Length: 165
Image (cartoon, rainbow, N blue to C red; front, top):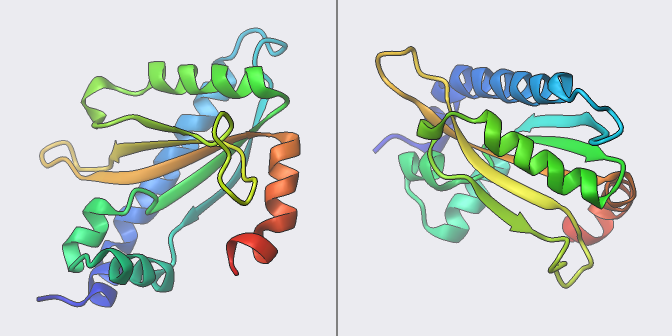
């Protein structure tokens, strides 16, 4: 069996394509919002999950090599920051409308309606983006965090103290 580190290195170009595609998708959604007072949103950070983080998650869930790339829902992540709660929920609908139907599951985790025990609030949208070559699909699990400016500030300020402990 191929080790996770070797797979990670070999899949890195695909993950980079996925992050570019995710950024492009979210940028296109923001650009198509005709009434800028209806949904006010801007792009936040994007990242590819680090190997060490993927290894921790794989060990915790007992995933073997390829399984980590199939089951880890946030291999690629992006963030959208909106002005208020209404904008957050509207943006999710715009994202859902924009995705092709064959991209796989579209799952929304609503941490606004049900904050976690640490107080974290945001919407997480898990989806799969096809970065294949047209002949062979290659669906990459992505997660988009959509939150308000205030939730974003709280998340940034408490990340190391609460999340990483």
